[in-house]
Length: 300
Image (cartoon, rainbow, N blue to C red):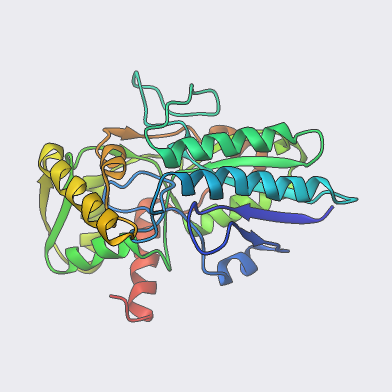
C-alpha cells in the first residue's frame, strides 16, 4: 500500500503540502508545515504573517482543499494511505476540566478551527474509499519552528511576555515525536478511520516552559503577563490596518481569544496505544535540542 502523509497549514501559496515518505528521516528533511506554537499560543495555527486576508481562505484551503485531495485519492486504482494533520483548534479548549479527546464535543473558537473540523468531516466521508487517519496536533515545537524562536530570543535577553497568565496549561509535542507518530500511524491498520489527539502525555504550564528555556540559556527571565482586555484593542487595530493595506493581519482577535484560554490539554493515550509509539521528548529534552539547533544555524 502506498503510504502518504498529507498536511494542510491553512494558508500559503498553494492548497496543500503533500509528503510521500519511506521513513522519518525524509520527513525531518522537509521544511515542516507545522502549527504555530509559542508562549501560550494555541495549537494548529499558521505562523504570524501567514494568516489569510479573509476567513473564506481558511475554508478554501483547509476544507475545499481537503475535499479536492481526497477526491483525487479516491480516484486512484489503489488509494494511498493518508494521514490528515488536523489541530486541537478543531475542537476548542478544555471545558468542565476534562482533557480533550476524540470523544470531545467540538467547540472551535475560530474560523481556522471550524475549517479544520469541516475538513475532518470530509476525511471521514471518504472512509470507505480512502484509508485515512486524522491526527489532531497539539502545539508543535522544535527545529525550524520560528514562532517559539521569538520566546527563546526574548528569554535570552532576560524577559518573557505572554497574554492571560503564565499558569495556563497546554499540551505540546516535539517535532521528532510528531514525525515518529505519523510514520507508525501510517503503518498501523487499526488507526484507519480513527481520529486521535497527539501530544506528549504530560501537559505543561507556560511558566514551566519559560523557566526551562531560561535554564537551557542560563537566564532567569522576568515574566510579564499582559491582560487580555488590554491586548484586545491592539488586535482590533492590527486587523483594521491590515484590511486597509489588503494584507494579512500579523495578530487578530481570534488568535487572541484562543491563546488566552486557560487550558489546551489533550489525552494522547489512544494514539500511543494504537500506534505503539511512545513520545520520547519530555519538555527538558525537547527544549534543549531546540535551543542547540537554533544556535547551530545562527538563529539564537
